[in-house]
Image 1 (cartoon, rainbow, N blue to C red):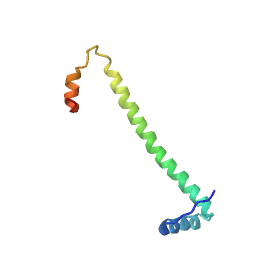
Image 2: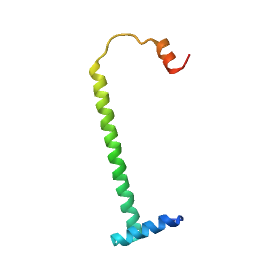
Image 3: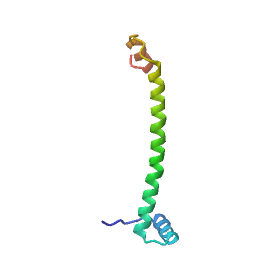
Image 4: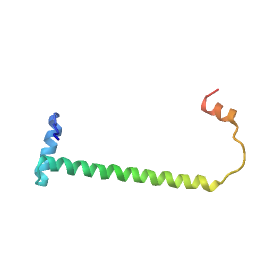
Length: 80
């Protein structure tokens, strides 16, 4: 498979990275992509953990047995 970098600045940055790391362009692109995936993955994992903690807090409230007032929630959401 081939990757064609058409944007001059991106080409310059990738060549500089390859030179700095002492690797070829393909290896520099792979390293760069892997590092970005790790960085983004860490953000996603942190977000998932935050959502999980919020879900646990909501579960702790327990079931009230009360019935939701559909008209009230429709009015809040603007769905009249």
